[in-house]
Image (cartoon, rainbow, N blue to C red; front, side, top):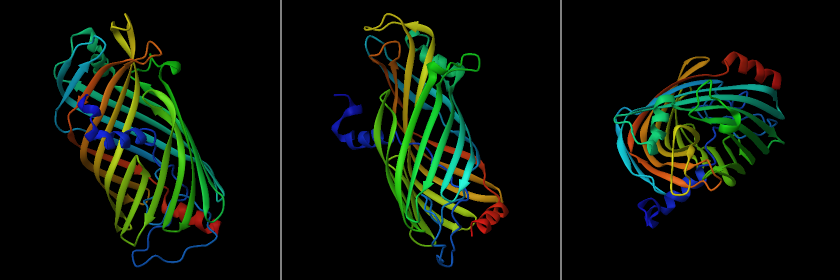
Length: 367
């Protein structure tokens, strides 16, 4: 039995498999929850409609620009399947640029609709690029990078003071395309989720739901648990289990510290420049690359201006999967098993939040 599927690693495999479908960020809510009173949690308006956010959480993000990089080189070891050979080299650069934009279309107390856009570009540079046609996959990745362009629509429906639900659908183009090669049918991935929740108090909200997403290349339904809780003026937890669990420390009204883990997964369609053959397919022209990373994170967020925050993050990335499957037939035969070496990572981001004056005006109108 392969080490990848040994009984010792089965619990981690199950966690990663479930989390594969639950990696979307929480939809922002406008206005965001009130800041935490560090002298003690004061009374709140009992007529406020419920949602998934609690006091003490950071402000809602409108525009996010993030750059992440692996500071050191690391190994990649590939084992071929179905007649494909083996290959190994060093990755000397791995960096990702992420841009996200959220805009409220409706912002009523009983109905909030948020439109989102995202763009991700992940770049790999290999120390010894593969010369074999069987590993033209890595040449494609190095030449064009891995890209995601997406849009999403989130509907947050507070039912009353206790109950709420959230529906979100997202469409993304994932692959190694560039601008003149982009084709919707070749790269489209669609996911949807529905969560129903309870706001037990201003400091505790939770919910259960399901997501229709991609695992092992096929759309399937998976569970989601939301658990947001502020225990006291300093400590809280924010979880979208099993994808993300974060312990929050409120340092001040202007600074937050987080620690925990997050599962980051991607599914890319790759159009090969050079075809190759396997035991089951004489002409492989397209591959599906599935990447799953488990990140242990330490993150610091700080307010720079009333509308501008920064985030600094560092941690360790453990790669669980970087495997390629044949997309030219419906069998989705696995042709390459890869393992990326574990490595530290660091990121820096800036994000724009609703200005405090605008939130204060919105709060006065609500009351």
